Structures are given as C-alpha cells and as structure tokens.
Length: 382
Image (cartoon, rainbow, N blue to C red; front, side):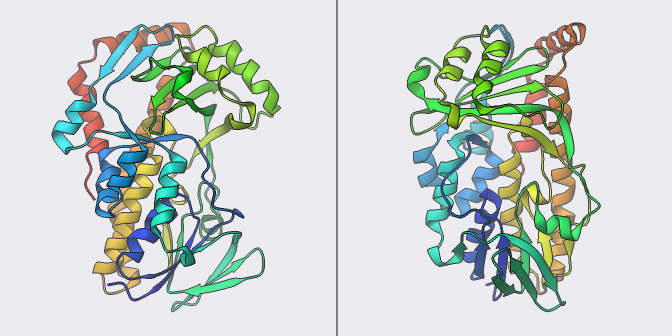
C-alpha cells in the first residue's frame, strides 16, 4: 500500500492512468488539470498489447472492449491502393492473447475518468510552479490556489510546465511535417474494414475503424513549422493533396466538419536522462514525447504509469522508486522515440527516386522481419 499524497499535473491519458494505478494501491491522489472541463477531446488511437496488459490489470478491459474495435487486418499501401505490405494482427493475438484495439481517445479518457473517484480530479488548475523542500512538494496554480504532497508527477504533456522548470535546457524538435486528424461515422465509408496507411511523396494518409461506429483518419504532409492556415482553408488543402488518392480518402475528408478537423505540427524531444529531481518526476509526453508514427504515445504513457505506481508501492523511499523508474523506462522509451522518428522520416520521403526505392524495399522485405520489429515494441511486459 502507498501511504502518500501524490499530486499529478495533467489529466490526460498518462495522468489519469497514473492516478488510477496509484489509487488502487492506496495512495491519496490529486489530479490538477489546466482545462476548465474534463470533456473528451482528440481523435483515434491504437492500444497495442503492451498497453492493454496494464489496462487489463486496472480492470478496464471490459469497458474498453465495448468502446473500442479490434484491429483484425491491416495494410501499408501506395497512395493509389497498390499493396506495399500486409500486416497480420492475428499473429499478435496468437502470441499475446489479444488483438490491438482501436478506440477514440475520448472513450479511453472517459473510461479512466469514470473509474476514478470524482473528488481526486480538479479542473481549471493550471500548474505554474512547484517548490520541493526535500520532504514535501508544494504546487502553485495559475488561479493562486496551492496544493501539497509527498510527490509531484508532471504528466502535463509535450509543453510540460513541470519539465520546463526542472529541465529548462530541453527544446522541442520539429519533425518536419504536420498532421490533420478527424473522426467520422462509419457510414462515410461503410466498406472500410482494414486498418490502412497510404504512402505518397512527402504525404501519408491513414484510416482506422474505431468502436462506437466511427472511423478515424489522419494525414501528414511536409511543411515548415508554425504554418498559419485559417481553419476554413484546411479542407481545400487536404483535397488538393489527397483528393485523388485511393477511395475512401476524399469521402472521409468531405465528411469531417470544419470544426472537428484537427491540425497541428508534430514534435518530440531528443531522448534525455534526468526525469526526476528530488520529489518531482515526469511521465508520458512530459518525459518521453514521441512522434505518432508507431502509435505508441499513449501506450508508452500507460506503461510508465503502471510501472511508476508499482515501484512506489515496492520501494521504501520515493527517491529509490524514482531512480528505478527512470532506469527501467528511459532505455525503452528512447528506443521507441528514435524508431518512430526514423519511420516518420522514411514515410515522409518526397523525392521520386527515393520513394520508388523505399516502396520496392518494402515490397521485398519478408513479413517476418517487420513482425519481429513490431513484437519488440508492442510485446513488452511491464
């Protein structure tokens, strides 16, 4: 049992998973969220076996299976639909006992939120600074409220305030491309069963069937950082780039309302050591932000949350737990961050000759080689 009061900055997937794992081990948990309300946001994500296992241990599998959709078939294709490589999720099920689960981020977030006691969640509490005296941590919020605890977990995302105070030397690294995302009813493409990613020249488009009768799509394109585009112009940009791609790409773009079309630059941080200082530590995108190319951002946060809670329960001191936490997590998250970055660079190649060579290699590459690489990432047990 954890007989401590633990403050968590951020009520995203990582923060809420940490809160639930700690709460179930007896900790007194306080979650401080910047947003004024905890309404579901975001688009789709994939929960691979490495994330499904800890979520199962937290008792969430029945609810998630109801809200998500198992990925039973997948393929990597050229922009026009020509096959580059077929994937076989059934092999993962044979090995790990479960298929990857595609789910709306909001559904996962709601499941976590509904499982926690309501009195642990504080909305409208933007953490602006902390003070650690070696025995307790005091947190100051933007609205002048303050909280004290035995430990502060900074799970406040890519632009983490906690990380900026702890490690002001770290800078975000722009991936060189931006992304659009959307979620539409399955009726927009009723024949879509396959989880598909299409590769062009400096552009990609993905389609993933979700639970709740929805389809998730995403698109990427090479752009300089900080490009400012009016929301109303995104549809025309997307249609100009992807309108002649394999069906149902154009239909999915057309079915997405302007106000639900998400656009953002993609960043990570070069993997670093020094996640903790005294009684403060980092988790999820605050500690190991990654590009989305391997679908591992949420999964890595869930892994880290489960392990941190277990170590705080096992170790006799906070310092010992945090030391083990970074020692066990940093090498793995660094490897995933680097693999995801490299995959993105390959996927975003724009020169015609380079793209033809890439596609030829993918078509010739034995499927078991790609499967072994995937298993090395998604088969990790924490």
